Amino acid sequence: MTPYILILIIFAFFALKEARYSGLFKKETEVKADAWVELASTLVLFAFTQPLILFSAGYLMLLGFPEYEGILADSSIFLHIALLLVFDDMTQYWWHRASHSRIWLYKLHRAHHNGKYMSVRIIYRNNFFYYLMMPSLWLSGVLIYLGLGWTYAAYLVVKLAVITGAHSDWKWDQALYVNRYTRKLMWLVERVISTPSTHSCHHGYDPEDGITSYKGNYGNLLFFWDVLFGTAKINRKYPSRYGVKGMRKAGWGEQFLWPLIPTPKKVSIVEESPNEHATNDNSKTNVK
Image 1: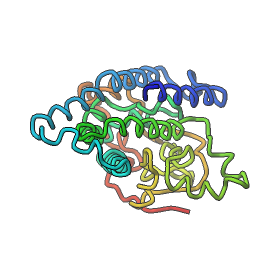
Image 2 (image 1 turned 90 degrees about the horizontal axis):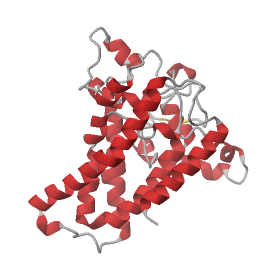
Image 3 (image 1 turned 90 degrees about the vertical axis):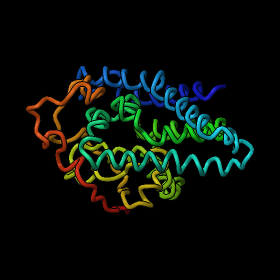
């Protein structure tokens, strides 16, 4: 069974759960542009951007360092996992965090937050250039060239299972927080991997609700990076609204292809970066 089949099975599982929980194809707060940007960004990422980056990274390594091809293929699986967690997942944490700290980077990431709902549909909802420039994808291509191909395939299945579950509107962690057999275990789980609770906080609508945290909870596979670098907010709650308070609703073309489709000149910086959503990063730890 190939990794892509496993990924599709995982996605289908969470999609079906979400469909029963809150509906999948027509969200209450959805607008017409949402489906178009989600479809375009997901298809282009898997059919073009990711294969292009992985191949290009390998080709550049072959040109510059042919003697290193496959050099780590027979090394320890634990070394493989450590390298992937650092150069893929931790690097993506910093890329994600930077995207909430500088307005031009946030314009590449805003599509992910323009949707006013949580769903498996929004996992890959980002600007085309957000993924094309993502350092972790390029570094993953380098690691594959060095011999981590099969480990990367397995790692990708695990990572996508976690981030799919974290974005789904089906809150799989909610019952586990109150179950007497699992609530103590969840103290550890929510500090290691991303969960619906911690990631929903990042997508909340209004930071004044006491739940939402624009400036935190950036982790993808590992939430541990937020704990380690002081951007974790854990409260086991879920915002009642999603999106970004005060931010205008851009068209799907601008969301997906900015700067090729530019921001209208009449738009103010406040509308692009409300509540300091994408200004200097002054995140602080808030782990309870």
